[in-house]
Structure formats: structure tokens, C-alpha cells
Length: 187
Ligand SMILES: [Zn+2]
Image (cartoon, rainbow, N blue to C red; front, top):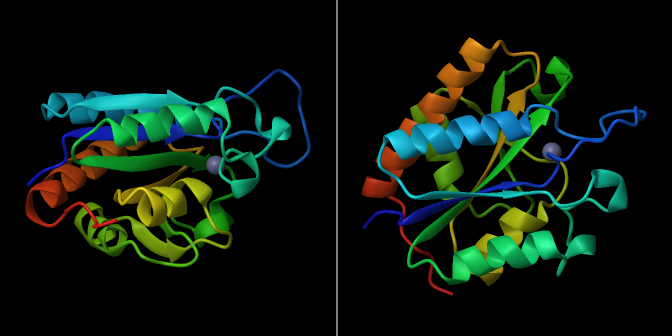
């Protein structure tokens, strides 16, 4: 049993020209998602990318407060129309200290259900960490839609070559996991 479609969500990928305090958008997430889609496509996987339709200031698309918005309707429809979907939520971060000095982090949402996240981290040499806040995409996919879901964070200062290398590793690990261990969770 393998995954029939990878649904890549990029909730913080939309950036505008306004320079804001802190980290108003994930500047590398779109590029990373495109690379991941290409890498999965090279492995003959079916992929769809669901980009953020609004900037983060209009509401954080990774939180339950934005449930029901167009962005969520799109990825949820993809999940519901796919026999064995897997959601991969793609992010990027600017401060290397944010996830303990790691370039690529796989985060568990709170509460934790994703046994795949740990397996994926081992296979792809990524860090496996507990996220600080509940991630709505992950929890809604896993808990409500019965769909495996994984959250990936890439460091924004990685060179293109290193980002690509990390992305390819993730893609290969996802596909090998999907053949061996990923099964659709019973609702
Ligand atoms: Zn993000």
C-alpha cells in the first residue's frame, strides 16, 4: 500500500513587499515545496502544491483560527478526493537557533500522533523535534481526516545546492516510508 498523492501545503509561503518585524512569511518555503514536488515527480509520485492565498498577517493558516478559509478548503478537498493521501506541510525558518542549530527539522504537532515523523527523520537525517504550538493542518489531517501528515522546516540560509540535497533526501525517505509503513489511519 503506498501513497497515491502527496499534498504539499505552504501556509506561510506568501510574502509581500512590506518589511515587517519578526518573520512575517516563510521566504524559502515556496522554493522548497517546488523542489520537493519535482523530486517526488522524479520518483514517479503524484503531487499537488497548495499555496497560501493570503499573507500571514491576514491570519495564520497554520492555526485553527483560520479553519474553513479557501486555502484549507483546497487541501481538504484534495485529501478527501484521494484514496491514500499524505499531507506534507512545508515551512522555512530564519534563525538557525530556532530548532537547535539544525538545517532541516521535522516537527511533531501538539498533541503528537505522527509515528511517521520519527521514522522519516531517521531515514532523512533530519532533526525530530516537538513543535511548540498545535499545527492545525497536521492535527486536522491526522485527527479529523484520517490522513498521515508531516511538517518540515528548512533553514532559509541553506545554499540552493544544500536545500536541493536535503529536499531530495526527504522525497526519497517519504517514498520508501510510503511503501513500507505508511498506511491510512482509520477515521
Ligand atoms: Zn511556517
